[in-house]
Length: 153
Image (tube, rainbow, N blue to C red; front, side, top):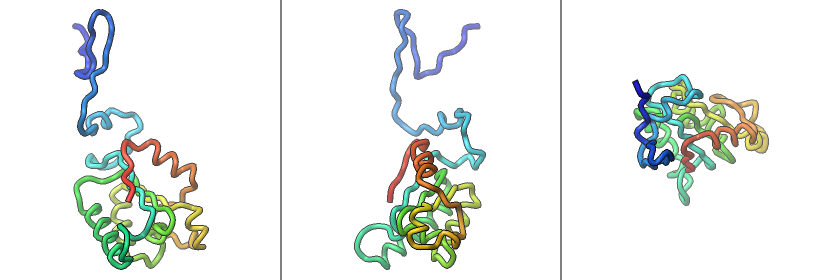
C-alpha cells in the first residue's frame, strides 16, 4: 500500500510543491511533539500585557476592562498558553491585586503566568508575587518566540 501524502503536499513531474492554507492551525498544533499537557481547548497563543490598564485614557476604566478581559478569558472555552506581564502590568500578579482571583483561575486551568523580573525589581515587589512565576527577559523571549501568535494589549 502506497503511503498517503498529506493534503497540503503534492507531487508534480517528480518535483514537490507546497500549497499554503489559511485558517486555524489547531489541527497542526496537535501533532507537535512539544505540545503542553493541558486542556484540549488551549491554543499556542500568548497574551502580552504591557500595562495594568487596558486601552488609553481613563485609568479607572482601563483597570475595569482588564478585570473584565481576564474574567472572560477564565470563563471562556479557549485558553492561551501563557500570559506575560511587563512594566506596571506585573502589579496584577502581586498580593492584593484586584484581578488575582482571575489570574489564579487561569493558572489552575493550565495557563502559565509570567511576570517580568526587571519590572518587579523596579517596583521592589519581586517577593510579593501571588500567582505565576518570575521570568527574566531570556525566558520572556523564549515564550513569545515559540508562540504561534502573540496578542499584545
